[in-house]
Length: 306
Image (cartoon, rainbow, N blue to C red; front, top):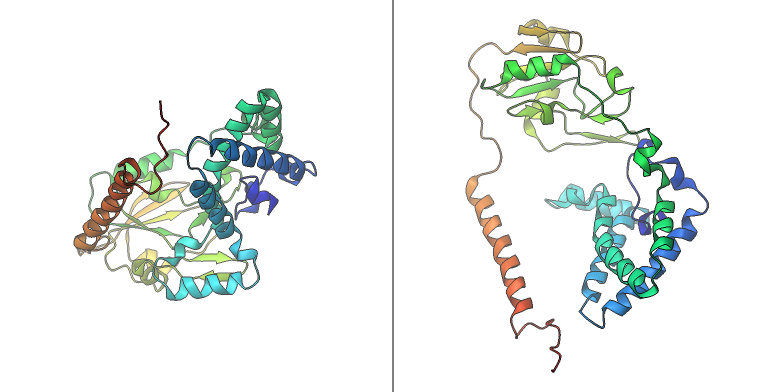
């Protein structure tokens, strides 16, 4: 609870700074949260802020739903049976809804109390590890030359790329064996197909990409290239690779061409529903802004008489 109220919380325990276990942290969090609430009360005299505060409270509830009684079962049922409910996974992202009213309220409180230095010290106390770049522990990681070589070979070439071993996460020696997302979808041109299933606490949450499901069965239909990332946990079927044409063989990556023509497969959903969704979302945003700005808006701030 205190971690979420302090705008913290993440599913990956490996990236949580040690300072988040500091026994002083709950006190700092309560002090800053109290100051933010006082600031929102002051700001409410000038503009309607409680709807925004309510959105922040809803974000806290969504972030904590998995630890509430029956929360896990409810999330599992929603994700399994309701389309789009997978957005509720990684619930720490909903803390972002709290960040805006928190920041506004705290800024007004600082202005009111004239305690900028004190609040700065308290904010630094929330996450001292990030001061001066993590005290020298944050540094860039350089990709091996193999990655640039493979990207150059794939530039302008048709065909989707299947990435092995089948896992969305990697641990490379050149990144000090830290767990990271597979960099291939972000580094390489074109479309890459990776295993989108998720293993959490020994349980596997099935993915949604039918092509990834076919890869798990050894089916390369619709695939033009196969990329093997070396030096990371996972198994690769050598019999599968034996049927392919090797294009690049380096210490970190191996690239194979799938023989034969690559059938064109639709990439993404049909155009019409996507356009309709964008038009509906844009219309909703436009109508909301007009409702707020026009005199008939229910939440328009009262005009002060001269």
